Amino acid sequence: MKKLLLLLMMGVFGLSCSQKIPTVLKTKFSKEALNQKLENEEGKTVTIQQILDQHKGKVLVIDFWAGWCRDCLNALPKAKELEEKNKNNIDFVFLSLDRSKEGFNKSLERFEMKDKENYWFSSGWKNDFNNYVDLNWIPRYMVIDQKSAIAKYYAISPEDPEIQSTIDKLLK
Image (cartoon, rainbow, N blue to C red; front, side, top):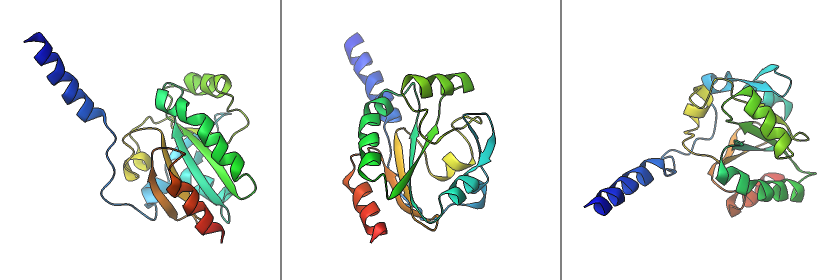
C-alpha cells in the first residue's frame, strides 16, 4: 500500500512539474510585457523594451535560466555552442530567474557568465513578462527577429533544430 501511495504521489508531482507547451505561440509582446523591469549586473533597472531596442536590427536569442536549475546548467554548454556558431550574426541575452541578487551574482561568477549580457528578474518568476510568454519551466529559449517580433516562441533546449532554422531564415 505504501508503494502504491508513493507511486501515485510521484505521478501527480511529475505531472504538475512537467513543461507544458503553450497552446498559442505568440509573435509579439504586450505593452505590459515590454514594460517589465529587470536588473543588470550592476543593479541598474532596465525594461524588456530597452533590451529589445539595444538589439534592434539583429537576431536575438533569449535564454531563460537560473543557477539553481540543473536542466539549465546542463544546457549551458550547448547554448554557448549555439552562440559561438552564430557569433557574428546574432545576439544572446540571458534572463536569470535566480531567487536573489546575491544568487544571481554568484551564478554569473560560478558558471562563467560574466562576459555575457545578463539580466535578473528582481520581481521573481511571476511577473508581466514571464506570465505573457507562458514561462512555466526553464530553460526556455526564444528567438526574436530584427524588428523585435517573436520568431520562435517556444524551445526548451538550445539543441532544438527549429532555433537554428529560425535563425537561418531570418538571416537570409
